[in-house]
Amino acid sequence: MRTVSAVLFLYSIFAGLALAQTLSPEVKPFVKIDSPVVALTHVRVIDGTGALAREDQTIILSRDKIESISDSASATISQNKDTQVLDLHGYTVIPGLVGMHDHMFYPMGNGIFGEMAYSFPRLYLAGGVTTIRTTGALEPYTDLELKKQIDSGQTPGPHIHVTGPYLEGAGSWALQMHQLTGPEDATRTVNYWLDEGVDNFKAYMFITRAELGAAIQAAHKRGAKVTGHLCSVTFREAADLGIDDLEHSFFVDTEFEPGKKPDECPDKSEDPVRLASLDANSGPMHDSIQYLIQHHVAITSTLPVFEMGSFPGRPTLEKRVLDALSPDARSALLWNRVRSSDTGLLRQRYGSDVSPWPAAFQKELEFEYAFSKAGGLLLAGLDPTGMGGVIAGFGDQREVELLVEAGFTPLEAIHIATFNGAQFLGEADKIGTIAVGKQADLVVIKGDPSKKIEDIENVETVFKDGIGYDSAKLIESVRGMVGSR
Image (cartoon, rainbow, N blue to C red; front, side, top):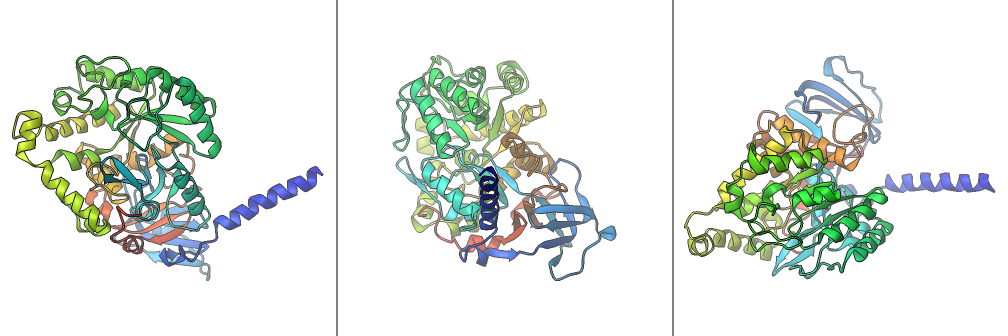
């Protein structure tokens, strides 16, 4: 009987693998390369470790794994019908990006967010993002079912780490979030969603210390991690409770807000004037950075969403972004951009025609650089919320560019956006760097992002599990859809 059970068990595993390797008619039109063996020849390799780029390399992929990496001059390539050889002179290969704040939803206006279960998975993959953490779900069942469809080859998209529904406290501004009623409710919620298949959680602005502590304990007991976009709870308080990660860096830390009361979110929870006055290299902010590092708390950088809301006219709205938006979403974005530069509103809010946000954004760049250089684990994401101009895939690329603006070298920025995320997720043995035996999740880029980081936008082919997807076709397939589906 045990032998029969073992056979059935193995059969179920192999059947699952076969299913995972079968691509549906919906996915096949986006596949550019699908051969048992693929040789990427004469390519520049940025391996994600932070090491210098290696010129004229040959990477051989066997099924879904990296079989070898060598100088092209000495590479041995089998000559048979199962091998597809690509000449990549002038191209660079980097590891697949690991997006650590990559929602599946988009702002629809009036505090409501819509699930982009069709457009966003395609755009993430097209942008070179092969693994994401959703970092807060508004439709967790949708995300879980989407993950199943992607894993089984029924729809194109990245590997997904599904986050449970937001762990939010009483008084939330967000209609779509359940408001916890206490520590017991927090524990029950965590256990319920772990049973349903999520593997991490995000605490939100109005959660109390007692609720957050209970959620962290319940998650850790079952091997899951908790991050947070906090307000009622300060960063240091969260570190004391054992939180694993904090979102948006110091833009949202309220511990320096005068009159901050325990378990209450201050009215000025994101005060640019306060933020711009802090010093990352000395004093209380420096001490806070050291405190988080000592408590092994990671920080997730989400610079694109802050850039979009901090600067009148910045970033330049790209045609590819506007083309991806639905007509209503495009109109809303353009209106929001105009409104953000209204001097009357600036005088009303800040008593000046000059916005304090650019100075605060610059300070945020300094914080993240200081945190990382002091030994902190900095993660990268985009957060496709705000005024609607930061969208899947494109925003992940912009995050890497902004890390370079913060002072990191292009190689360091790519390391943060690949290896660091893999390390936090416990998957550094499989993804995050280009090495023999690792998963064949790679991005083929025209140009050299080690010298010109903007080349990271020139994605042509994205390998996920050894299958090469056509970036341009994926993008074209969702033209005019973001904001609707």
